[in-house]
Amino acid sequence: MTGTDDLIRAIVADARPVRRLASPFLRAAEWLGFALIVVTVVTVSFGLRDDLAAKLSEPVFVLELVAVGLTAITVALAAFCLSLPDRSRFWLLLPVPAVLVWLSTVGYGCLTNWIALGPGGPATAISPRCFATAVLTSVPLAALLLRMLRHAGPTRPIETAMAGALAIAALTTGGLRLFHDLDPTVVVLGWSFGTTLTFTAMGGLFITKGSERRVLR
Amino acid sequence: MDGCRPSNPSSGSCADVNADWTTLMARAQKGDRRAYATLLQDLAPYIRSLSRRYFGAETDVEDSLQDVLLTMHGIRYTYDPCRPFGPWIVAIARRRFVDRLRRGGRIRAREVPLTGHLETLAAPNSMGHHVDLDRAVLHAAIQALPAAQRRAVELLRLRELSLREASAESGIKQGALRVALHRAIRSLRQALAMR
Image (cartoon, rainbow over all chains, first blue to last red; front, side, top):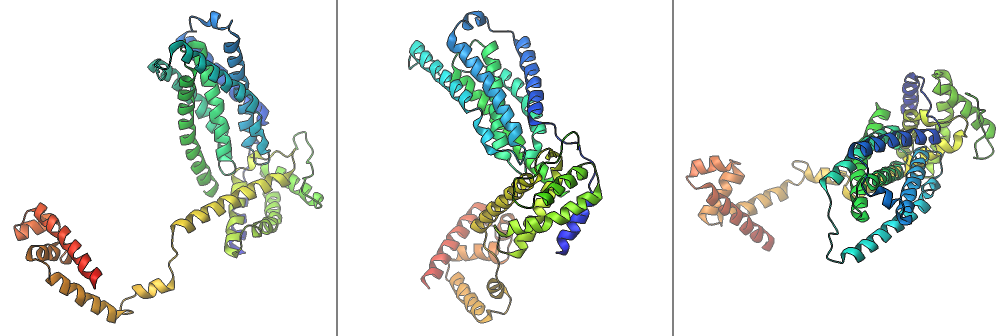
């Protein structure tokens, strides 16, 4: 076919040296390192919660923090592996145990809040400060992650975006739990997921289109 | 090879050929155009054969092959020569094929292809007798409308004036013209449906 032969000639003419991607483990570690810096900066800026010492003596709170941390690490690793065409789709299962533990602690938090506050309690309260910190944490993480995972556009955009959004949500929620003394965890989780999913969906769409344009240019 | 040997792909008996592909791709990543050209020429028939399992039409096969080659070129930096080349290129190809099938399904669900039959119907003079007949029926229906409605149809539809122009010419308010036109079209629709 003449069209394909012409295309091959055009592709070969465009064949500049490229820098190979580093191992997904290394790249996930780089992103998590950046995330640690961001969460630390935001935590220092807003200050740790007053009752942190007391909360750290509660097994459920510690378990939630550990689960959130493990979720962030495993799901970030899954996102970087899923972004490569030849890696197994089963990487998506890696964070499942940590996510289940995290969600179960959220459920426990809701139950205890419901018992303490009653059905008429302020179940949907959210502070602007909480929202601001969620955005300040998640936006830089999402921006860097989208840049690092942009090659997933033509192959696995949805799975990669899902894993990336969950990683950012876990880190944002973990950060919020350290410097916010609000305990309605479903609200915190909802805002974290909502914010990060929105940014990731917008970015994912942009990157998929950008990737197609780059390929076709 | 940056400290790693090209490994054989998992896909089957032509391991030597695919090991060559691994080497060629590693060289292509360093900018070796000759190696890249050889790799692409070798890959084209293989991807074409994969594509034939998904698509029936030869144009789809060729378009999907070109899509795979372009995608591979765009993300060639994601290939790790320490890993087999076969699963990498096959994964890209399958994903592009599936995306193409989905896109085709969406297009088929929402669009109707233009056929020669429709072109014949739309061509001038091809249905001249019926056009004349329809024109006469429509003209009679318009003449049967009340005067205000007939005036609105003449100004706004037959002469294609704007509401403002029609109002200025007839001295009728724009709102009254709009109402008269609405009633006229409803009456015409009923009259033509009864026919």
